[in-house]
Length: 132
Length: 132
Image (cartoon, rainbow over all chains, first blue to last red; front, top):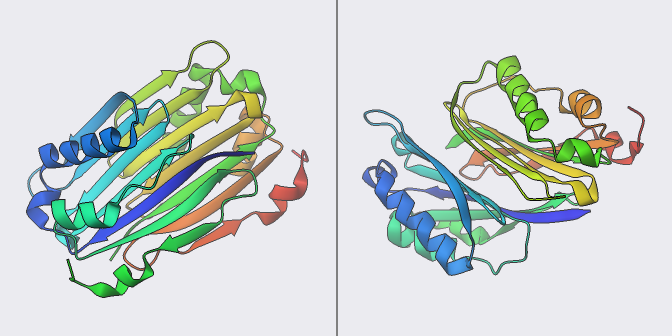
């Protein structure tokens, strides 16, 4: 039984300062949630000390949204798991704008029985390396 | 830059009562965390009303652990994202024991740049249909 769709998003070449900015990451999540008409139930946020990154987890009526940032590598990863059909969010444009990402890669995984095939969208962005 | 490993786990044929039991799901998470030597920072749990399932999200020092259960389909899905190397947890045996799952499928995704290839472990369990 297919029970949901999960987007796994990897953003590289991001501004390290943005990846340490919990308030910025919270606003980014608010934007995803508003744009897709999702409903947040509760959340956990953690800023690792000093030069460390940010972890955010939001439980949604529709499943969850998560991020982990690695300022030391300029990398952020996101998971958006929706148990109800939602349009795709424009991760590439938004993460290039908000985090100054140089490339954004998206893998879509169908959750549930016998269906966990993944495919990669935007393969060109993997190789673009800075055409924001 | 590879920043972590994520296990996507789908369990089918589970006991619907177990999938509505938040306390059971919390104990299952406690077991994963203890067995793998992970450190929980904070968590969100939500039991959907009536016949609904359970959502659990735990922020870890090492990233996160999440579950969503669908009692109406006998299905539970899990995400375990670790930014540090960890041994594999025996999802198959444990979910067959704790949730009475008839099959457990695991997909491993490497998180970070250019590395989001996935592979499926335990392909036979997809077809086993109840040989716990």
